[in-house]
Length: 131
Image (tube, rainbow, N blue to C red; front, side, top):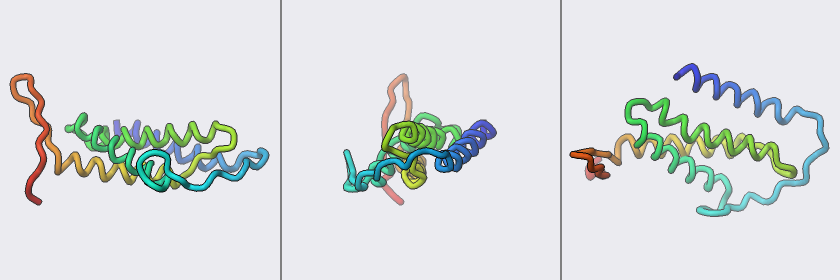
């Protein structure tokens, strides 16, 4: 699985490197970096969504941090790949990085602050009370 994730990351890096080298008419100026949902900046939105996906990935894949991190990395890469295909939009390495950093923070929160316990078919969420 590590090789699959490493291959995905390297492929996406190559995609972003080549995506800006293509000969095409210059796209219109991108809109100002304004947030749409959670924060005042677009990068903040990417980080918040990445953190939520990192937390969800860690709660789902307790046995492997690699699997857990694949959730926000894959979602961020997919979002930027879709942005690259839209007219007047572009893939942003900074947006991708914000999503990955948010994913790391969310995974860390799921790793040490939030615990799932399962007893007799009942799942409970517990919060760590000491640091």
